[in-house]
Image (cartoon, rainbow, N blue to C red; front, top):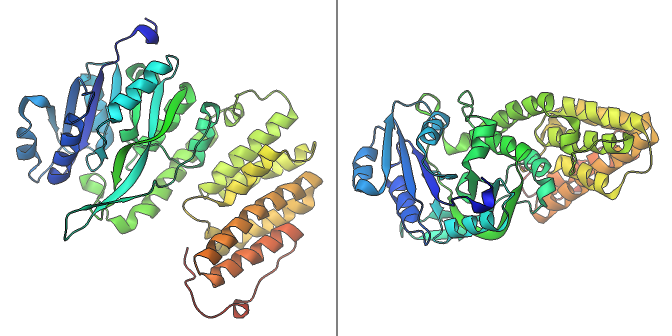
Length: 399
């Protein structure tokens, strides 16, 4: 049956573990949709708090699956096997969907029958401990992009989250179950897999609120606090992207996925290298940059220049450039390898200029000075440093 004539009813899935108060707020928001889901499945992943009692208060409005603690992926996989409707909406138990969320996402699916999934923007929020009032913040990392650029944009950094996505069930069937071996970033791994096989349709409208909190995360056997989030995410991302490097065809790093000539091959290599650099996989990134430099060809295109500048603009920062001198040494050597290599090194240095400006705006002159030193090194092709005494002795040197 063509999607344009298919049923547009939705199964909402909420995996939860030891978050009784939060899951109650999450479910109230789902039940308050202007277009309600046809089915709501809550997977209680072995909670030991008051989750069971909380869920009973929702009576027959939700379906509850209780299971021993096996992690989010196992819970979602189990719920998918029980889903009765063709569209799937997975909502994290600590987030709050906005009243028009499902109506907006369903409207997008209806408007683009060949799309495999729809997604929308989000805002962040926190609850004041004293007043219990919500404080709404701007969207976190977000990347407006055309459908053809969605895969590479997602590989660079995840910006679409499950509560903001509505996915055809048959897309999940095509890519297979959530990876239960991943302790973290299972949704990122799944998003990449979906982006490889399906076209997205999107809106800039916010469809959910992403909670910022200090509570523990992860399955029972691997719980960790908020202070560990960044390191755990980076570790998981590296695992996922190393797999992508081995499994994706080079053509998948191009918008039209056609690698017809050396010019296309060069851009694909630069894009893949940029992605690996943003994930701290500099050994793979430099390998791709070297191969691209040896291909030669015309001057770097505007698209290639923009791609390379993003190599040092990861949301995780790039402090590794100060910790491992071999990276800068390799980039300086790249600039001497060929004319194309020189252009690559200079494009990378222009990304560092932006880092320098960011640090100056944040009143971190010492860190800005270090970035400026690296910028000159990469641009001019020789190691250079800027002495910290050049700058006033104030401000943070942190990221």
